[in-house]
Image 1 (cartoon, rainbow, N blue to C red):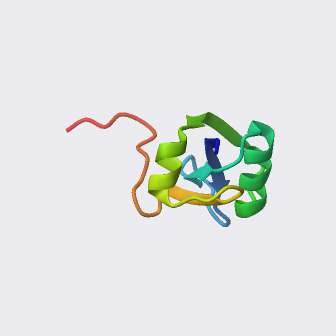
Image 2: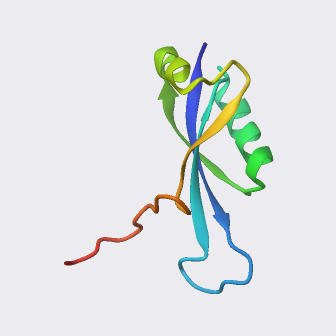
Image 3: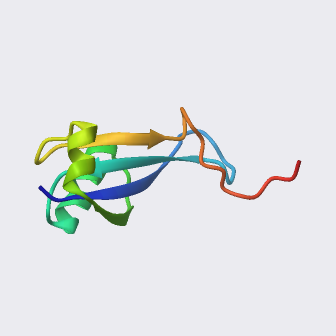
Amino acid sequence: MDGWIVTVAVFKEEVDDDEAFRHITYVVAVADPAEAVRMTLADCGAKAAMLNCPIEEEQLLRLGVKPGELVIVHEDAIDPIISRPRRH
């Protein structure tokens, strides 16, 4: 079983600034990278996706992803991706 990690940026409605989107990262259990992107776009309604890297079968099994399935592994509404460096 092969798989891919795919990230999308979904634009929020009614917001007019640089932070007007959220990131969602998926694990998709299909061999074809183009199909992984298509499945991800269909699931979230985003207009573009970034194919990050392949994921090994062992990792897919640990996540409980079956062939042909996709799961969200990161969503910035829960755990934000920091888009720019911050000083403390």
